[in-house]
Length: 142
Image (tube, rainbow, N blue to C red; front, top):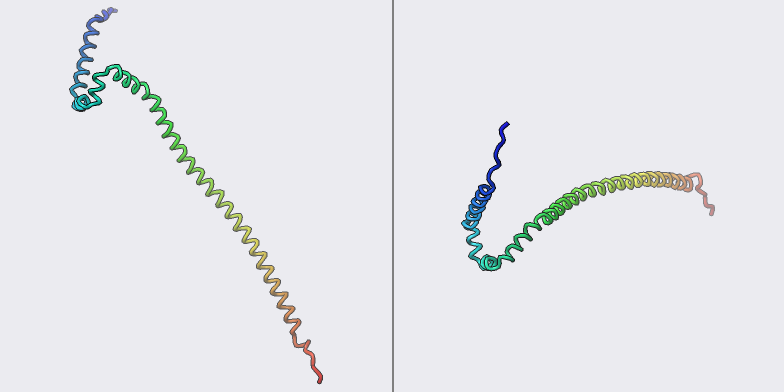
């Protein structure tokens, strides 16, 4: 087996420095960056590098918690939406069963009331026919 020589560290650093310089040049030549740097905020940040670095670090570090919070908000909203749908389905099901029970009870009560009314009608009709039948007519003597 042939051993490979590790590349020179100074060559690596020079290559890295060249790439970083090209990246910085491409960012600084971007038209949006140029327009931002000409604005009052960009000029202020250019005069205050510590504040610029602080804002950059804060934005970088706060990206993960903000992303987690937004993910939590989206997942909670989805869960609430699904929960509302499930809860609404449960409420409609329970309401439908309650309505079915009430209607069955009303049907039974209606049947009993109809039977009672029919029996009452037959009894009253029989009594009226019995009371006012022709055999009970009295002759009045004068």
